[in-house]
Amino acid sequence: MTEDKNLREIQELENQEWLYSLDYVLQNGGKERVVELLQLLQIRAHKAGVQIPFTANTPYINTIPREKQVTFPGDREIERRIKSIIRWNAMAMVVRANKIENGIGGHISTYASVATLLEIGFNHFFRARSENHPGDMIYFQGHASPGIYARAFLEGRLSVEQLENFRRELKPNRGLSSYPHPWLMPDFWQFPTVSMGLGPLQAIYQARFNRYLEDRGLIPKSDAKVIAYLGDGETDEPESLGAISLASREKLDNLIFVINCNLQRLDGPVRGNGKIIQELEASFRGAGWNVIKVVWGSDWDPLLEKDDKGILVQTLGELVDGEYQKFSVESGAYVREKLFGKHPELSKMVEEMSDEQLRKMRRGGHDPEKVFTAYKTAFEHKGQPTVILAKTIKGYGLGESG
Image (cartoon, rainbow, N blue to C red):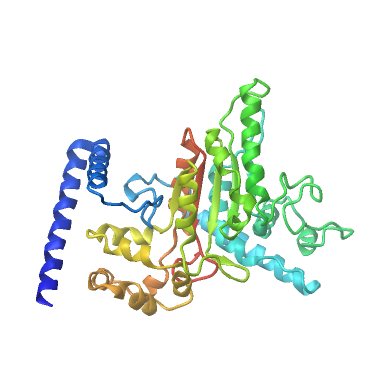
């Protein structure tokens, strides 16, 4: 037992020496020098017969570190209030429609999870067609249509009667289609989408066709984007990921995917015993995309900064989506025990935080500042299509929508 303890202490000292050396090289030689040394170490290990496991994954934390985060330009309180009104209207519209006629349905929780992702887009990034700009093309996540209708109602573009006839578009005084459908609502929707993977597939070929027209001088070159919103469960459809290699091969930097990773389908978790964000990251990185993960909100930044030994990052990476879904419906005391109680260092890290604070720690897809930075980075990226993998939640708990 004593020998094992001594060995662990020696290994811990070795780990610290390597990490200090890496920090020194990074500070004095820069990132390029760090990459060079890591490649040399990999070659040396390979020659010695060490088989390094292949991975296309980065750690289970945000791609963009806190120090690279840009200043949020909007009024957080006003935007939060608008978002709250829209979420309420979306819920009220679906509930009223189901009272009028049984079995209407309406996917209330999908919009609740994607609200921040859409509102940051509407308020700061989406550009309409004008004399000076062709406009961005948006493929909306079909199940989030109640939120789009609720926002349009707030803008005065839809009537009370239309909202009352949600999913009853053939009513005499007009109604609203279940999902985006330009044939049923030609003055409202631009592209048809739902959850069958056709939206993302169409978006890829639309972005390619836009480049085709530009390259042949048929339309002026512009910075217009094609943006596709889809759910993590939708990525199981073959069409969703079937053409992603084409997008990278054609260097379609006019294309952005935003995947709402709320970890939940209608009939259960998307990946109960796995991690859908890591799985998707590997697929898109392997296909040559620029990947931006928005996993944790600002509440997590101080904890991650304290994580000198990487124990918190390691623990977050070891948990599976089923456990994260359990956290979302449990108390802060449960989170303290089952997550931070795994190591003494983690328990000490949160000892001054209340259980309520732990319960309310947001996931990245509900943090406007994190989402804004991810969008800005995606819009400015050159040479590759970009996918934003945003972790959200359908409900409250560890990462509530707020």
